Image: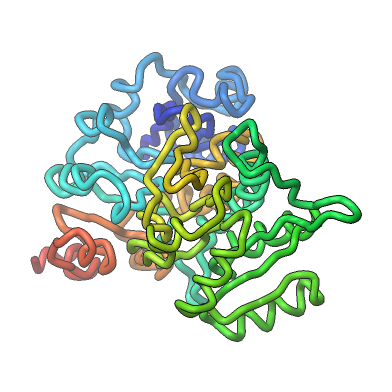
Length: 375
Protein backbone atom coordinates (compact mmCIF):
# COMPACT_ATOMS: atom_id res chain seq x y z
CA UNK A 1 0.00 0.00 0.00
CA UNK A 2 1.11 3.59 -0.61
CA UNK A 3 0.82 5.51 2.67
CA UNK A 4 1.01 9.30 2.82
CA UNK A 5 2.02 11.45 5.79
CA UNK A 6 1.25 15.13 5.09
CA UNK A 7 2.33 18.03 7.27
CA UNK A 8 -0.40 19.24 9.63
CA UNK A 9 -1.69 22.71 8.73
CA UNK A 10 -4.04 23.48 11.62
CA UNK A 11 -2.92 26.57 13.56
CA UNK A 12 0.16 25.73 15.65
CA UNK A 13 -0.33 21.99 15.17
CA UNK A 14 3.18 20.59 15.47
CA UNK A 15 2.39 16.89 15.76
CA UNK A 16 2.88 14.46 12.89
CA UNK A 17 0.96 11.30 12.05
CA UNK A 18 3.91 8.92 11.86
CA UNK A 19 7.39 8.72 13.40
CA UNK A 20 10.37 6.86 11.88
CA UNK A 21 9.54 3.65 13.78
CA UNK A 22 6.15 3.59 12.08
CA UNK A 23 7.73 4.18 8.68
CA UNK A 24 10.18 1.35 9.27
CA UNK A 25 7.34 -1.01 10.24
CA UNK A 26 5.62 -0.28 6.93
CA UNK A 27 8.61 -0.15 4.59
CA UNK A 28 10.05 -3.37 6.02
CA UNK A 29 6.76 -5.04 5.08
CA UNK A 30 7.03 -3.81 1.50
CA UNK A 31 4.80 -0.75 1.69
CA UNK A 32 5.68 2.71 0.33
CA UNK A 33 5.60 5.69 2.68
CA UNK A 34 5.47 9.25 1.33
CA UNK A 35 6.29 11.95 3.87
CA UNK A 36 5.80 15.62 3.07
CA UNK A 37 8.97 17.61 3.56
CA UNK A 38 9.29 19.01 7.10
CA UNK A 39 6.19 17.09 8.25
CA UNK A 40 8.02 16.00 11.41
CA UNK A 41 10.03 19.16 12.04
CA UNK A 42 7.64 20.46 14.69
CA UNK A 43 8.08 17.23 16.65
CA UNK A 44 11.85 17.33 16.37
CA UNK A 45 12.07 14.77 13.54
CA UNK A 46 14.09 15.88 10.48
CA UNK A 47 13.46 14.56 6.99
CA UNK A 48 16.75 12.65 7.15
CA UNK A 49 15.36 10.42 9.92
CA UNK A 50 12.44 9.41 7.69
CA UNK A 51 14.74 8.81 4.72
CA UNK A 52 16.98 6.63 6.88
CA UNK A 53 14.12 4.15 7.39
CA UNK A 54 12.96 4.13 3.78
CA UNK A 55 10.45 6.96 3.43
CA UNK A 56 10.28 9.06 0.28
CA UNK A 57 10.30 12.79 1.03
CA UNK A 58 7.75 14.63 -1.10
CA UNK A 59 7.87 18.37 -1.70
CA UNK A 60 4.18 19.26 -1.59
CA UNK A 61 1.04 18.21 0.25
CA UNK A 62 -0.83 17.98 -3.06
CA UNK A 63 1.56 15.27 -4.25
CA UNK A 64 1.24 13.29 -1.02
CA UNK A 65 -2.56 13.36 -1.04
CA UNK A 66 -2.79 12.59 -4.77
CA UNK A 67 -0.45 9.59 -4.65
CA UNK A 68 -1.42 7.89 -1.37
CA UNK A 69 -4.00 5.17 -0.93
CA UNK A 70 -4.05 5.82 2.82
CA UNK A 71 -3.38 9.15 4.51
CA UNK A 72 -2.14 9.06 8.12
CA UNK A 73 -2.65 12.33 10.02
CA UNK A 74 -3.22 13.68 13.50
CA UNK A 75 -6.03 16.21 13.12
CA UNK A 76 -9.09 16.15 10.90
CA UNK A 77 -8.71 17.62 7.40
CA UNK A 78 -9.55 21.33 7.39
CA UNK A 79 -11.03 23.39 4.56
CA UNK A 80 -7.86 23.79 2.42
CA UNK A 81 -7.45 20.01 2.49
CA UNK A 82 -10.97 19.07 1.41
CA UNK A 83 -10.14 19.31 -2.28
CA UNK A 84 -7.04 17.15 -1.74
CA UNK A 85 -9.08 14.15 -0.57
CA UNK A 86 -9.10 11.53 -3.31
CA UNK A 87 -12.16 9.41 -4.22
CA UNK A 88 -12.24 6.27 -2.08
CA UNK A 89 -9.12 7.27 -0.14
CA UNK A 90 -8.52 5.88 3.36
CA UNK A 91 -7.91 8.64 5.91
CA UNK A 92 -6.69 7.50 9.32
CA UNK A 93 -6.74 10.34 11.88
CA UNK A 94 -8.76 12.08 14.57
CA UNK A 95 -12.02 13.32 13.03
CA UNK A 96 -14.47 14.34 15.79
CA UNK A 97 -17.05 14.71 13.02
CA UNK A 98 -19.93 15.61 15.34
CA UNK A 99 -18.03 18.62 16.67
CA UNK A 100 -16.27 20.07 13.61
CA UNK A 101 -17.24 21.74 10.33
CA UNK A 102 -20.20 19.76 8.86
CA UNK A 103 -18.67 20.35 5.42
CA UNK A 104 -16.00 17.80 6.26
CA UNK A 105 -18.55 14.99 6.62
CA UNK A 106 -20.27 16.20 3.47
CA UNK A 107 -16.96 16.04 1.59
CA UNK A 108 -16.09 12.58 2.94
CA UNK A 109 -19.49 11.27 1.88
CA UNK A 110 -19.33 12.93 -1.55
CA UNK A 111 -15.87 11.53 -2.26
CA UNK A 112 -16.73 8.12 -0.80
CA UNK A 113 -13.68 8.33 1.44
CA UNK A 114 -13.08 5.85 4.24
CA UNK A 115 -12.77 7.81 7.49
CA UNK A 116 -11.01 5.67 10.10
CA UNK A 117 -11.31 7.72 13.30
CA UNK A 118 -8.83 7.37 16.13
CA UNK A 119 -11.37 8.60 18.67
CA UNK A 120 -13.96 5.87 18.02
CA UNK A 121 -11.61 2.88 17.77
CA UNK A 122 -12.97 0.99 20.75
CA UNK A 123 -11.95 -2.28 22.33
CA UNK A 124 -14.48 -4.82 23.61
CA UNK A 125 -14.00 -3.56 27.18
CA UNK A 126 -15.17 -0.09 26.11
CA UNK A 127 -11.72 1.55 26.26
CA UNK A 128 -10.53 3.96 23.56
CA UNK A 129 -6.81 3.18 23.12
CA UNK A 130 -6.08 5.78 20.43
CA UNK A 131 -7.84 8.55 22.34
CA UNK A 132 -6.27 7.72 25.69
CA UNK A 133 -2.75 9.13 25.17
CA UNK A 134 -4.00 12.50 23.95
CA UNK A 135 -6.60 12.59 26.74
CA UNK A 136 -3.76 12.05 29.19
CA UNK A 137 -1.79 14.93 27.68
CA UNK A 138 -4.82 17.24 27.50
CA UNK A 139 -5.89 16.43 31.06
CA UNK A 140 -2.48 17.27 32.46
CA UNK A 141 -2.17 20.37 30.28
CA UNK A 142 -5.61 21.58 31.37
CA UNK A 143 -4.34 22.28 34.87
CA UNK A 144 -1.13 23.91 33.58
CA UNK A 145 -3.00 26.32 31.30
CA UNK A 146 -5.78 26.82 33.85
CA UNK A 147 -3.27 27.79 36.52
CA UNK A 148 -1.68 30.30 34.15
CA UNK A 149 -5.07 31.75 33.19
CA UNK A 150 -5.84 32.32 36.88
CA UNK A 151 -2.97 34.80 37.00
CA UNK A 152 -4.19 38.39 37.05
CA UNK A 153 -2.14 39.31 33.97
CA UNK A 154 -4.10 36.71 31.97
CA UNK A 155 -7.53 37.85 33.13
CA UNK A 156 -7.82 35.58 36.14
CA UNK A 157 -8.68 36.44 39.72
CA UNK A 158 -5.07 36.09 40.87
CA UNK A 159 -5.25 32.76 42.68
CA UNK A 160 -2.31 30.41 43.19
CA UNK A 161 -3.71 26.89 42.96
CA UNK A 162 -1.48 25.49 45.69
CA UNK A 163 -1.93 28.46 47.99
CA UNK A 164 0.60 29.18 50.74
CA UNK A 165 0.42 28.73 54.53
CA UNK A 166 -2.29 30.92 55.96
CA UNK A 167 -4.13 31.41 52.62
CA UNK A 168 -6.75 29.13 51.06
CA UNK A 169 -5.79 26.84 48.23
CA UNK A 170 -7.32 27.18 44.77
CA UNK A 171 -10.50 25.17 44.17
CA UNK A 172 -10.67 22.95 41.09
CA UNK A 173 -13.83 21.21 39.84
CA UNK A 174 -13.22 18.41 37.35
CA UNK A 175 -16.37 17.39 35.46
CA UNK A 176 -15.91 13.84 34.23
CA UNK A 177 -13.80 11.17 35.90
CA UNK A 178 -12.44 9.50 32.78
CA UNK A 179 -8.88 9.67 31.47
CA UNK A 180 -8.94 13.47 31.12
CA UNK A 181 -10.43 13.93 34.58
CA UNK A 182 -8.05 11.50 36.26
CA UNK A 183 -4.98 13.14 34.73
CA UNK A 184 -6.23 16.65 35.46
CA UNK A 185 -6.92 15.71 39.06
CA UNK A 186 -3.46 14.13 39.46
CA UNK A 187 -1.76 17.37 38.44
CA UNK A 188 -4.13 19.57 40.44
CA UNK A 189 -3.65 17.48 43.58
CA UNK A 190 0.09 17.48 42.99
CA UNK A 191 0.06 21.29 42.87
CA UNK A 192 -1.75 21.36 46.21
CA UNK A 193 -5.17 22.48 44.98
CA UNK A 194 -8.49 21.58 46.58
CA UNK A 195 -9.96 19.18 44.00
CA UNK A 196 -13.47 17.85 43.37
CA UNK A 197 -14.17 15.22 40.70
CA UNK A 198 -17.72 14.69 39.44
CA UNK A 199 -18.94 11.68 37.49
CA UNK A 200 -22.19 9.76 36.97
CA UNK A 201 -20.50 6.37 37.33
CA UNK A 202 -20.34 5.40 40.99
CA UNK A 203 -17.90 2.55 40.32
CA UNK A 204 -15.55 5.04 38.68
CA UNK A 205 -15.89 7.36 41.66
CA UNK A 206 -15.00 4.49 43.99
CA UNK A 207 -11.88 3.83 41.91
CA UNK A 208 -10.91 7.51 41.95
CA UNK A 209 -11.46 7.70 45.70
CA UNK A 210 -9.06 4.78 46.13
CA UNK A 211 -6.51 6.35 43.78
CA UNK A 212 -6.42 9.67 45.60
CA UNK A 213 -6.74 8.31 49.15
CA UNK A 214 -8.97 11.19 50.19
CA UNK A 215 -6.79 13.92 48.68
CA UNK A 216 -9.55 14.65 46.13
CA UNK A 217 -13.26 14.78 46.83
CA UNK A 218 -15.54 12.67 44.63
CA UNK A 219 -19.15 13.64 43.95
CA UNK A 220 -21.97 11.91 42.08
CA UNK A 221 -22.72 14.19 39.16
CA UNK A 222 -26.20 15.68 38.93
CA UNK A 223 -27.51 19.16 38.14
CA UNK A 224 -27.27 20.28 41.78
CA UNK A 225 -23.76 18.96 42.48
CA UNK A 226 -22.45 20.37 39.19
CA UNK A 227 -24.00 23.78 39.86
CA UNK A 228 -22.64 23.98 43.40
CA UNK A 229 -19.16 22.82 42.42
CA UNK A 230 -18.91 25.21 39.46
CA UNK A 231 -20.08 28.21 41.48
CA UNK A 232 -17.47 27.55 44.17
CA UNK A 233 -14.57 26.72 41.84
CA UNK A 234 -11.72 28.94 40.77
CA UNK A 235 -10.96 26.55 37.89
CA UNK A 236 -13.40 24.23 36.12
CA UNK A 237 -12.17 21.43 33.83
CA UNK A 238 -14.68 20.00 31.35
CA UNK A 239 -13.71 16.42 30.52
CA UNK A 240 -16.93 14.64 29.52
CA UNK A 241 -16.91 12.25 26.57
CA UNK A 242 -19.53 10.44 24.51
CA UNK A 243 -17.56 8.39 21.96
CA UNK A 244 -18.08 9.89 18.51
CA UNK A 245 -21.02 12.06 19.59
CA UNK A 246 -21.45 15.60 20.78
CA UNK A 247 -20.57 16.25 24.40
CA UNK A 248 -23.57 17.01 26.65
CA UNK A 249 -23.91 20.62 27.83
CA UNK A 250 -23.51 20.25 31.58
CA UNK A 251 -22.57 23.84 32.43
CA UNK A 252 -25.05 26.48 31.22
CA UNK A 253 -24.31 30.09 30.40
CA UNK A 254 -26.46 31.07 33.37
CA UNK A 255 -24.23 29.00 35.64
CA UNK A 256 -21.11 30.60 34.15
CA UNK A 257 -22.57 33.99 35.03
CA UNK A 258 -22.80 32.88 38.68
CA UNK A 259 -19.06 32.18 38.93
CA UNK A 260 -16.78 34.75 40.55
CA UNK A 261 -15.17 37.22 38.11
CA UNK A 262 -11.74 36.02 37.07
CA UNK A 263 -12.59 32.34 37.43
CA UNK A 264 -11.38 30.04 34.64
CA UNK A 265 -12.95 27.23 32.61
CA UNK A 266 -10.98 24.84 30.40
CA UNK A 267 -13.19 22.71 28.14
CA UNK A 268 -11.15 19.72 26.97
CA UNK A 269 -14.28 18.37 25.22
CA UNK A 270 -14.45 21.37 22.87
CA UNK A 271 -13.43 19.28 19.84
CA UNK A 272 -16.64 17.30 20.42
CA UNK A 273 -18.76 20.44 20.79
CA UNK A 274 -17.83 21.11 24.43
CA UNK A 275 -19.64 20.38 27.69
CA UNK A 276 -19.70 24.06 28.73
CA UNK A 277 -22.36 26.03 26.88
CA UNK A 278 -20.33 29.23 26.52
CA UNK A 279 -17.31 27.50 24.99
CA UNK A 280 -16.28 27.70 21.33
CA UNK A 281 -13.10 26.36 19.70
CA UNK A 282 -10.03 28.58 19.93
CA UNK A 283 -6.44 28.23 18.72
CA UNK A 284 -3.03 28.39 20.35
CA UNK A 285 -2.63 31.86 18.78
CA UNK A 286 -5.72 33.19 20.55
CA UNK A 287 -6.51 30.60 23.22
CA UNK A 288 -8.85 32.49 25.55
CA UNK A 289 -11.90 34.73 25.59
CA UNK A 290 -14.13 36.18 28.29
CA UNK A 291 -17.81 35.48 28.98
CA UNK A 292 -19.43 37.00 32.09
CA UNK A 293 -15.94 37.95 33.31
CA UNK A 294 -14.92 34.27 33.29
CA UNK A 295 -11.80 33.27 31.34
CA UNK A 296 -12.51 30.52 28.78
CA UNK A 297 -9.65 28.39 27.43
CA UNK A 298 -10.99 26.22 24.59
CA UNK A 299 -8.11 25.19 22.33
CA UNK A 300 -9.26 22.21 20.27
CA UNK A 301 -5.78 20.73 19.77
CA UNK A 302 -4.19 21.25 23.17
CA UNK A 303 -1.63 18.40 22.84
CA UNK A 304 -0.26 20.09 19.70
CA UNK A 305 1.57 22.49 22.01
CA UNK A 306 3.77 19.68 23.36
CA UNK A 307 4.46 17.70 20.17
CA UNK A 308 7.58 15.86 21.23
CA UNK A 309 5.53 14.19 23.96
CA UNK A 310 2.25 13.98 22.07
CA UNK A 311 3.49 12.66 18.73
CA UNK A 312 5.35 9.71 20.22
CA UNK A 313 2.56 8.92 22.71
CA UNK A 314 -0.01 8.93 19.91
CA UNK A 315 1.95 6.97 17.33
CA UNK A 316 2.82 4.27 19.86
CA UNK A 317 -0.87 3.38 19.76
CA UNK A 318 -1.83 4.17 16.15
CA UNK A 319 1.07 2.34 14.48
CA UNK A 320 -0.18 -1.28 14.85
CA UNK A 321 -3.55 -0.47 13.28
CA UNK A 322 -1.94 1.42 10.37
CA UNK A 323 0.21 -1.66 9.73
CA UNK A 324 -2.83 -3.94 9.90
CA UNK A 325 -4.76 -1.85 7.36
CA UNK A 326 -1.76 -1.69 5.03
CA UNK A 327 -1.00 -5.42 5.28
CA UNK A 328 -4.54 -6.75 5.00
CA UNK A 329 -6.36 -4.02 3.13
CA UNK A 330 -9.07 -1.98 4.82
CA UNK A 331 -12.04 -4.29 4.32
CA UNK A 332 -10.25 -7.44 5.49
CA UNK A 333 -8.68 -5.61 8.45
CA UNK A 334 -12.02 -4.23 9.59
CA UNK A 335 -13.75 -7.59 9.23
CA UNK A 336 -10.99 -9.20 11.31
CA UNK A 337 -10.91 -6.58 14.08
CA UNK A 338 -14.08 -5.30 15.79
CA UNK A 339 -12.15 -2.34 17.22
CA UNK A 340 -11.30 -1.15 13.71
CA UNK A 341 -14.92 -1.68 12.67
CA UNK A 342 -15.97 0.78 15.38
CA UNK A 343 -13.43 3.28 14.05
CA UNK A 344 -15.16 3.46 10.67
CA UNK A 345 -17.06 6.76 10.49
CA UNK A 346 -17.68 6.94 6.73
CA UNK A 347 -17.30 4.47 3.89
CA UNK A 348 -18.35 4.45 0.23
CA UNK A 349 -20.61 7.48 0.59
CA UNK A 350 -22.29 6.42 3.85
CA UNK A 351 -21.99 7.50 7.49
CA UNK A 352 -21.18 4.29 9.32
CA UNK A 353 -20.93 5.51 12.93
CA UNK A 354 -24.32 5.82 14.61
CA UNK A 355 -23.63 8.77 16.93
CA UNK A 356 -22.18 10.83 14.07
CA UNK A 357 -25.13 10.03 11.81
CA UNK A 358 -27.59 10.99 14.55
CA UNK A 359 -25.86 14.26 15.46
CA UNK A 360 -25.38 15.41 11.86
CA UNK A 361 -28.69 14.20 10.41
CA UNK A 362 -27.42 11.42 8.12
CA UNK A 363 -28.88 7.97 7.61
CA UNK A 364 -26.88 5.49 9.65
CA UNK A 365 -25.59 2.55 7.62
CA UNK A 366 -23.78 -0.30 9.34
CA UNK A 367 -20.28 -0.94 8.13
CA UNK A 368 -21.32 -4.47 7.14
CA UNK A 369 -24.08 -3.09 4.89
CA UNK A 370 -21.71 -0.47 3.46
CA UNK A 371 -19.12 -3.13 2.64
CA UNK A 372 -21.77 -5.34 1.05
CA UNK A 373 -23.20 -2.47 -0.99
CA UNK A 374 -26.65 -3.08 0.47
CA UNK A 375 -27.32 0.69 0.80
